[in-house]
Length: 505
Image (cartoon, rainbow, N blue to C red; front, side, top):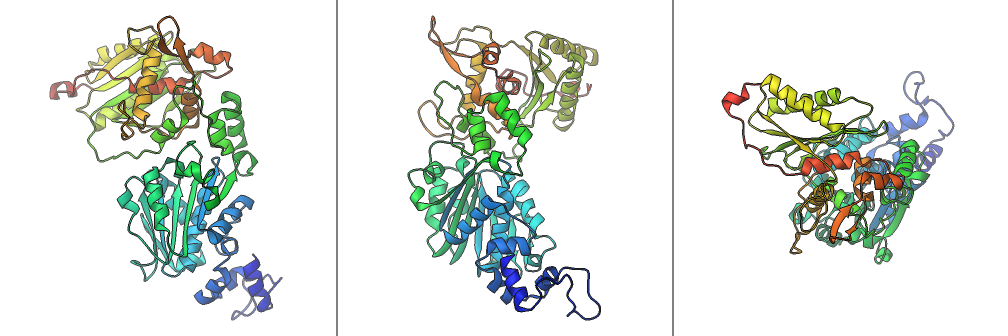
């Protein structure tokens, strides 16, 4: 409140709860709130041009903690700021307030807000802008649309624009005396694009802010905290030390996957991951799947449903859905019998069939142990109802197979997922990510803690079993196994005929 307090002091208004200078009787508002509405734009510029913290508190009613203040001041004072953090620390709210401040007080400002996916911009950042802007003094000057924030009356020259960081041409070509570039989840943005963005900030009052979970131990974001740290103001936020974070969730992750696991280091501690040579799927691969956009306009060609069935009371029954390459949020149940699980699967399948009646839906079930009951019930339903648009595929984990590189079915399925997420093909050429994943903490952890070894007698790769994981005091990787099932390719008919389509559950 320092800037506003100086202003109020000059008007002899410090300590007064109401403003008696307004016509008529006093109003039930604090002097600060009333005066904000009476200050003209020029005075606001004088007050807050160099005071993003005061502006956030006085105008936006946002009270930053020490780390959020550090980010705000760094953007004010430094050309390049790089923030690595755990999750849930309030970084999106901080970014929103910085954008509003910079927009109001930098003449003809141009701001590029970018992230690896549209969702991070449209569903995360943009609602946060609306939250802190709506109903404030700043709302009188700025208009927020689905993809733009602009100064009223200066739409073409004074704006913030949202652009996904997928193509270099999306973010090239914008230059201005006052320009701010915000890169959310910067660790998931390609080095080619980050290089282009860094090359854009050539003006004296140009700024760039990288902010991200540190998911990769290589690349430009990693370098900004290591060999290039002299060029950046580097800020580190540990979610465990932040008051607003979910401490119960943090303790759960530490208990289930280990305080020194990469999942905890990255998602909680805000530390870069260790290079674990014996982990089969590396963290940066999984985050690549999470940070990949999906084109919802493309035609649906394949629909897969998979179910990993719980064997013990503490395990999870997990039902997953994949449409083309996109995995939807997982359905997780505990303590559920096989009949109810079959019902969950049929409910999902029927909804998808109503929407895509031409598609044969493949349902893959972990048929090992109690999972056989789910397979049997699904086949019974299909027979009783004459359903022909579902193909039920029972799959057994941990069965030795004849394969050149992989010892058993579990390892083969994990290798398929790894290949879909891998940045390079077998020839070493860069390729697009072929699997879009939900941002699920436990799925991330389960995929990235599972180790592998070489089956000595045959020289083949073998993923550690659930039993071996439990010896390491790790929970059953039910969500990861469901993903393995989802991505297992099977041969089915391409479409359902009109005659077959009439049969519904």
